Amino acid sequence: MSKNQTVLIAADHAGVELKAALQKLLPDWTWEDLGPSQADRVDYPDFAEKLAKKISAGQATRGVLICGSGIGMCMAANKFAGVRAAVVENASAARLSREHNDANVLCLGARFVATEYAAEITRLWLETPFATEGRHKARVDKINLLDKK
Image (cartoon, rainbow, N blue to C red; front, side, top):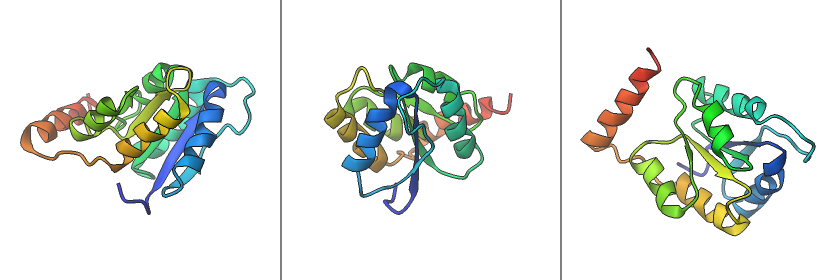
């Protein structure tokens, strides 16, 4: 992903602090913060929907969602056509989710990943291209067909 493309980012109350930290630690990217700005209790599906709708509509190509575990955000985001969200807790999974699965939404668990490591994971995820060789593209094409069923 080129650094001149905007990356969407959203969280729930558990992820507000990590969301702010990622934007500061990764200043080479332009971030569109979809909220929330405070750590008051909110429901993660509301923020997953905001981000996933924009990805699904082609208004952005990548996004980062953060909640306590990353799981709830991932489940909600994957309800939208064209969204391939992945919960990632290490650098290898970040790379593979991009190379093999063309993940367009990264889901992080604020309670499971330290801030500096989350920044490393996010940077790697943003910089890793999709390996468009036959088998990976064919599999992602099959995933995309599921959106039409």
